[in-house]
Amino acid sequence: MRSRVSFFTCLLSLLIAPFSASAENIVVVGSDTIGARLAVQLAETFRAKMATQEANVSFELASKGTSTALASLMEGTTDIGMASRAPSIKEIAKAKSLGVDFRSIVLGYDSIAIIVNEANPIESISLEELELIFSGDATDWASISHVISGKISAYTRNTASGTYSILQEKAMKSRNYGKNTQKLAGNEQIVEEVAANVNGIGYVGMAYATSKGIKAIPIDGLKPGKLDYPLNRKLRFIVDRNKPLSPMANDFIGFTLSPEGQAIVESVNFTPAY
Image 1 (cartoon, one colour):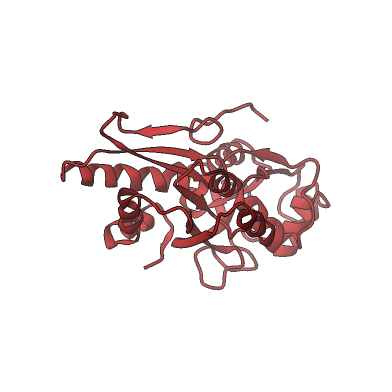
Image 2 (cartoon, rainbow, N blue to C red):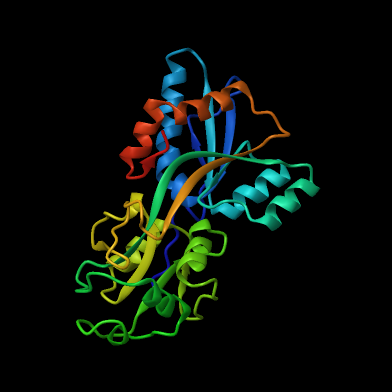
């Protein structure tokens, strides 16, 4: 596997608009699925909108996985968390022990798309086959399909990712990932690896499923985006009820849920919440 570091995932600390003493800074931390594209567009549009009202706002975005959103909220180091999964019972209990009360705000819906190289002749896959591949039980395409053979290269997100956890729960019966799966920091890295490897398979949010060099394949005949697709999930902002947001941060969330904000959600290939 080639060594790549993505600015928008591994090292992301993106400052949108130059920070100044008069600018209100909003810190947003968490999911790469939300943060690498959608949150950037929402923040840029909101900042421009505020500028027309002579209000100065800047954003710090760190897209390193859902778990980092929850940890940062518990540490009090972020205003808004981005999450592609719900907090676990354990995370909720830990937060409450620290005086933090998570509030989830659904901003859209996503399907976790299974992607393969565009040259791969396989046209569909089952949940059972996904379990075999990502658990490491199936290591050659010949054990999955009669139309392709070769050593499978399975690319996954890292353990901080909500997407990693959802696939493990919904497609793998909560089994451990195989030792030969290759963990990557973000959706864009998975797309790059699968596009470069005819034997590659991975999973990404729908915002990344139409990238060059890959194709998304149905699961048990169901295409991503359909209501009965087995890997659907909610995309959330998470805040701390016990730590009131600034008026500007509240306005940003309101903007995200407005028709203008929801149009941006749809423009990056997610399904709007409203």
